[in-house]
Structure formats: C-alpha cells, structure tokens
Amino acid sequence: MTQSVASKVATIAGGCFWCLEAIFREVDGVEQVISGYTGGSTINPTYQEVCTGSTGHAEALQITFNPDKVSYQEILKIFFSIHDPTTLNQQGEDVGTQYRSAIFYHNEQQKVTAAKLIAELNKAGLWKKSIVTQIAPVDKFYNAEAYHREYFSRHPEQAYCRAVILPKVTQFRKQWAKRLK
Image (tube, rainbow, N blue to C red; front, top):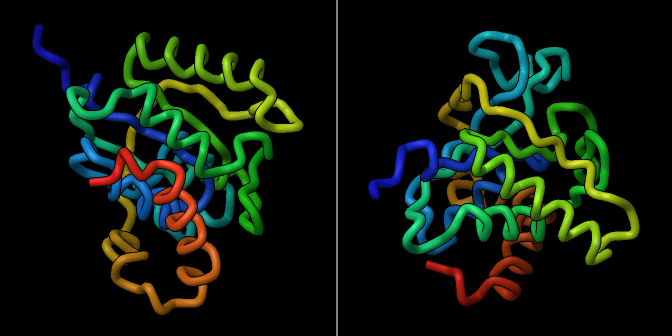
C-alpha cells in the first residue's frame, strides 16, 4: 500500500517557529521543514500581521517526513518534549494566540493519533497541568517569509538564538540522541 502525501506531512504549532524548526531539521527521517502560518482566517498573512494576534494564525511548521524512518506519533512525542503544551496561547515570553500549542491534522488517523497521545500524556502526569494543545484540521498553510527559514542555523550569534533556541536544541540532542540525523 502506498502512503498518501497527507500521511507524510505533519503540521504543528508550539510557540516561535524558529525554535521548532531548528529541532525538527535534526530529526532522522524528516525530509523538509517549512515555517509558516496556519489556523486563522487572513489570506496570505505576513509575519507582522500574525504577530498582532488578529489573524487567528499560529506560527507553525509543516514537516514532510519519511514514515519508514520516523512515525507520525514519534514526531508528536518529540513535539511534546520540546515545548510546554500546558500553557494556553503562550510559550515562555511569547504570548498570544499566534504562539498556541496546536496539532493541525491532515486526516482522521492523525486526529486519532494526536488525541490518543494527549490522553496518554495527561494520564502519565508529566506536567502539573493538563495539556491544552488544540487539535484542528489543517486548512491553508502559508509559508513564512524567506528571512525566517533556517533562522537558527543562519544566525547562531543572534541573542535570541543563543539564549532561547540553543538551550532547547541542546536539550533535544541529549534527550533524542538516537533520533538525530
């Protein structure tokens, strides 16, 4: 049975897309990572518009992956380990609906997998609060402007990269060493 294109694409949001992108680029089996915007109503939004919180869009990633190397469930497990899924519309100092934790599913199987994993993680009690990650169907995904792409690898000296992204990437590399490219 041939995999459909949708079953090889994951769309997630969990705060600043620079942080998520830097991590998922290192996952074995991930073929492409695109930063962008989804979940809102504004057509072809700009970064400046999304930052206002008025578009309804979240900063998100669209991840193309090889399911023979990494499963959708494993993509989600990594996702939950690299951000705080218990804070509503916030990741660290980034506050607003554009920084919400969300899984935008492409098919019913992804929806079920996400809901099951959230229930398992809540039951395991890994966090003091319950997971508030939104599960919603993916609609239109808009690519972010070119200057956002591969931001961490192109600007490692930038203060935000050193203070926020690098510690997350370092922790990911320790925790998921077996999953690195």
